[in-house]
Image (cartoon, rainbow, N blue to C red):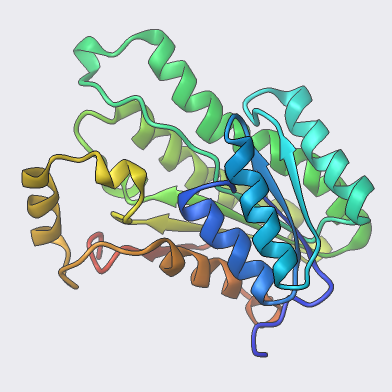
Length: 250
């Protein structure tokens, strides 16, 4: 198979549902053993692990709130201790707390920044220690077009996602000498549970802005992750790949 990940071990944060689930399964299809991180959806995480094992790969569900440094360290350590190594880290865990800034609480600001941005830092820091010893690694941060163009009512989310892009570039420079690549994927409007809760009128308006005329599927993001995780992408680092149907062209 092209873009083979045979023999690799991947950790996918927020891997029990939506985009994270699609990523975990796609990496397993390409040969990776996969650790599925979750916070509260234990049943969903177990279902993803069962699907991974049906593909003939090893799967492991690990509960951890990546916003908490001790829990993030536990996630990475458990993955390495159980499966022997970590080759691929996909920082996918993310939340939204949308509100116009005049009504946004400090708690809603902190929750989004802590999960989306600090969680990326916590997991990457723990994983990089292991990757540097091995002189190999792939870190892929799932960011958003909101971090590129901004979205009204999402100052917290847009800031967290823009922060991930800056973090990606800076970390890529730090670890390139150890053959570790760090890239980001800026996801557009993707057909997930979050999208399903958007009012129909708003969905139609958003679709009108997308040159390809449709929302993405979780698998669209997963395919891009599989490429960036592969050896064929070894000369790509510090980049943000937009997977958004052409929405944020610039």
